[in-house]
Image 1 (tube, rainbow, N blue to C red):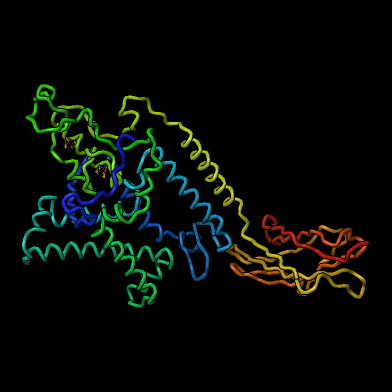
Image 2: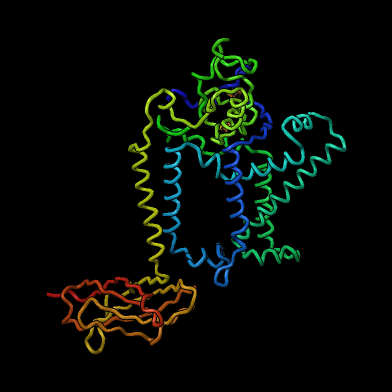
Length: 467
Ligand code: SF4
Ligand code: SF4
């Protein structure tokens, strides 16, 4: 790529890799992409804070009940045995990330990543209490006075209240939030709940209040490998060097070509609004989270100068070189097809999921037994898991060999909701019906009150060697 992704280089002056962290004071920006980000923040945080309070069918609509090993998602209840759905979901999420990154760069980082979203809210609070960029810089440089202490303390108090509500909400996804609220207000929270609420509160406070861009630059692995998903047709945020250079200040109304300049007025506003403190004019850099703040601010500068907008814009490397951009390319098609297939598979398998499981464990101590009536008998232990939200009685049957008989000590199988029951059963058959020493047999389990709720599992039936 022309615009090579720049990596860490030694600090020029000291020739060392270590550079002291410089605090970044992003300037507030308005414009189309800023509005989109605000919408994204409100929608995502709104969902995050509201969802745990939603009730569905007598329980919390979304609850990951770890002690009971049950995950409720509205009408669905997932068990540890449903791990396959989680694995599928993670694969779909990873593929979606690959697909959208190849198509349109770091959309996730710029608009939806929790680090971006919470940092944005922390910045709003900071701006509200401490003022705009210049006032914040001035305040930080000023000596510690009562006024400064009051302003800083107010900001940290608000940050911490917001972070504490975030930690409380997070724990509310694992412990019923209404109970948690009751415990919180009566000072009777358990030690683990207290620990996790405080842990997530401090993590939010630290990440969004202090670490900010350092999480993106130094801690997030995605920043490091995302450029490997880019190609010449990926939508990226770029500075149009051909149009902008040579940069330089000039009076409004001056034709830049007449004074030997490009369209960049070198106002550095694109650097001042950048949350990671980089200069997009130096080319594509891995620190760029694709927030588009520099597009918004540069467009405003272009408008003021009566120049066309788009000196910094979403574009592709091919488009920058005047070549056509291809949206449908092999990588996109493969990611897209895989994503559509696996998403369809996930929804289909969840929609047709049966909340009933049966494991068949054959008694390994003996191959088979002969009964006094001369029948061949195999013994099994059936582990039945009722993953439904109500108890069921079940009917069990077996087939696979002519004349198979099922012998059960207990005539009725009943399983309460969410319980695993163990049933020993014997299966007998007349040896004349055995054509071979090892046979597949099929156990059918069906709920008495709901014939649709049924499951079939295969077991092995062993008999004597036939000569
Ligand atoms: S905001 Fe636009 S005009 Fe100002 S320095 Fe950046 S690229 Fe140049
Ligand atoms: S360079 Fe532009 S898009 Fe990238 S992080 Fe900075 S402001 Fe956002």
